[in-house]
Image (cartoon, rainbow, N blue to C red; front, side, top):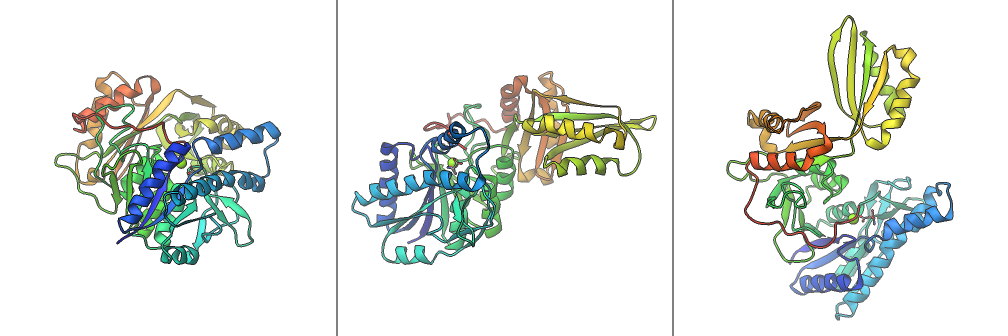
Length: 418
Ligand code: ASP
Ligand code: MG
């Protein structure tokens, strides 16, 4: 008998039929002898629909507290309905809101972090033979205020809960069969990975592989929770996310990810003297702008050029911040560029294998494309390129690193909403 946390995303419980199918699966698992703690997201596009409603109420951004009050209702609908579906199959079951389940968070609305979990009630209910269902994405502050964990936060609820109750496994059920070497909607012969390390998964999740929420992966790594990503539409094995993962023979790159949310900003003709970079990036940090890749090109006549990338949505703001410190820092001009994309290869084996990045540059240049920026970490190499031929680049890299398979990837229902 094992203790399992099973998490079902919004598309897996998107309508009553799907909800009933999920209910049968849970009952099947419980009756096979496991204890099941289930975490669910809001049905389908509910969270987005609720956000749309607020826009019809007022143009002014709603108070963050009331936003959380509203958005947490989505998950409450799910837990209640799923509980009813399970009940109708003759299985004893109880549903809890985040706060009933003892999920405590910091006092931040909209993106709170979990600070403590007191699962006594969950244990008691399990003891009595119940399936326990917990609303994802929500918690409560010490003062009894309702909070949410940020979009896609149900994954984090599931992993944190699995850590707190020392579950044997945290299964994340979604609409794909597992983690793929790249998006199977782009590359038909993408490879389903039997295993992947937390660090690799974290890189991929941060790079926009939307299957898992980055914070959930971080949590799983810190508490060593075995995560299994699998389909809610079939019983295929899925992908295990864990501390160490075996590499398939001859494969160094585990996955390829891309991020279209990239803009490049360049500061040209910066007077070369100590502290210049610090001034620029301190000003950007003060404006809450995340900077990704930073490149300094050579110095000519005491003047340097810098380029860096930011999220597309931060571009205008970043330019304004820089214009605001132009006279203080002393540079000639700021330019910016859109229509870029960051392509990355990720693999723990890169640490000890030379030539992996070189091959990436070669593949991209053989397509006649130039690379605007490069960044590397121990297990990742990213290139910023023009966005026009992204899919072609991903396919070429996938082939070059020996990742193509002869099987078509299974892609189930509609994409999971984030
Ligand atoms: N319902 C929330 C969202 O759409 C949380 C989640 O799905 O994980 O972001
Ligand atoms: Mg989700």
